[in-house]
Image (cartoon, rainbow, N blue to C red):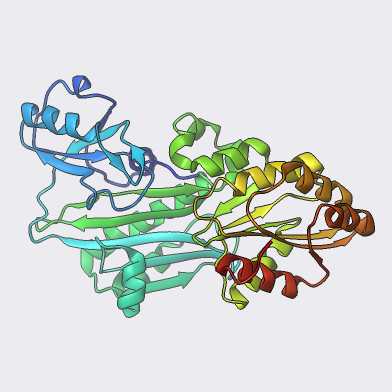
Length: 377
């Protein structure tokens, strides 16, 4: 679950990380007065707000209200602006911008700490173009508090010295604590600004919370707008209780079991196709679950084919087959089916004109050919 910038900054402030003073408004009329120039930052759960015109500045109350009227009419990557963070505008002339972050590293089975002197731009861009500018450190698994000496070592490695180095290291420790306390899988400040007069402040904030830990973080749920957190397709999948991740390709993938679906994605790529999604109907899926899965994937625009990969254990192949037949997909499908009640399932499908494969590789290749127009249904 992604948090809005204002909520992440509230958490950072609770941990003692300095952030600009500001208020959240849900309409121009809520802004009554200004004591200083402000930055007006649209609160939407996508990147690139500045480039999309979602971050503006104002020097007085009249200008600020005028800007707010513009922002509340704006859509950023399809998301309407429903709230705006109005915060103190900082003097960034001659300032140094850093990146501080922690991310759950599943490959290493721990948390990776990152720090860079190249803050203020996408960390992915830094990693791609200037990887040497990012200092990374894999932390001891299960660590609950970041050792100050580790934070200081990283700060020294990016060129910080003296009191500035110590302060930045302290903020790094507090950021780690915010991550642990709130079950985050990502916590970052980009940029952490060091002004020319020595003030250090987090001008942006990002946190993603582990969905599996939300039972411990119920106080955060009230601030989540599902229409922003998830696409319409993802919302539908969540409603049906289906594990779904939207991707960028044109071949939908449905399977039973996360490992099988992941293998299906890889096999589609092996034969030159591009998966449109990850969808796991889960073990023991019924005909109704299969119809729901087809309904979800069919919502995606420009879909060319559907690859259904079933290896039945507690999932019955005849149930899956009935779901497919009852849904009557309009998009060409490639079917691989093995396991419990396999013969019954294949009989149902073949009676309705569907070709069923035993090999995942052959089926994936067929799905790619369907998507490219080389094969009919």
